[in-house]
Image (cartoon, rainbow, N blue to C red; front, side, top):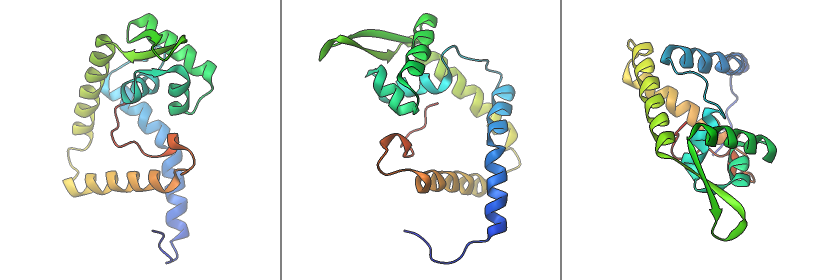
Length: 160
């Protein structure tokens, strides 16, 4: 439901600047948590966890990237042993990827590192401040989502 009350344009501009800085928050969190780059990328690994086993085309849709990009990312993850590829039971010409035990362990370890880094960074935040941030980010993501694009909606469970 949209609010008909006018919003504060200065607040909107401040939010725009904060969102532009969001990439640096992700970078700083990765640095503080101490996990390195994952061949193929953490978003691709998380997508496999969320929707796998799935075809490469489904992962590409989930990541909102070109099929060739998803294919390269998944190949790198497979080379590292983080995903398994098997024939698609409904179409033997295609394959499906699923999270391997090593991939599950990698994601679990990263989540533990991120949780610890956030616990430290948010140590002087009150629980209601954290909840307000989470609620606001979830609401913004939902409000920006394109109803015609299922990949743009906020997932029910974030896993990477």
